[in-house]
Amino acid sequence: MLAIQGYYDGVSIKPLEKIIAQPNQRIIITIMDEFIEPQANVHKKGVRGIFSSHAEQRFIENEKRAWESAAIDNYENP
Image (cartoon, rainbow, N blue to C red):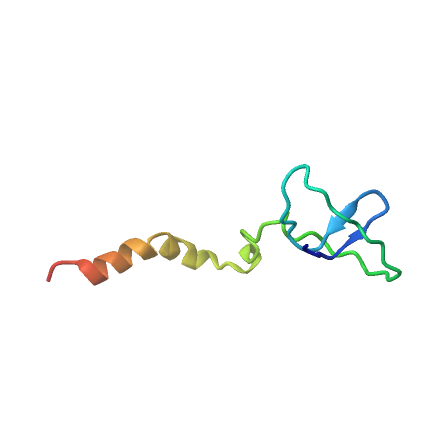
């Protein structure tokens, strides 16, 4: 048996952990007497571009060519 934590938001049950279960697998739901503050579901949001507001435009072109420059520096024939 596996136990995971979650909360009821008034409409549905929201797990706080990944559920490892098969479709149609029987589960037991236990209602606790404790209350928690609901947490935002970070799994639905990606982190791509999270620091874009801190990007410096003068470095963007260098970053686009960084892999190519590194390959030339490391593997160019002498």
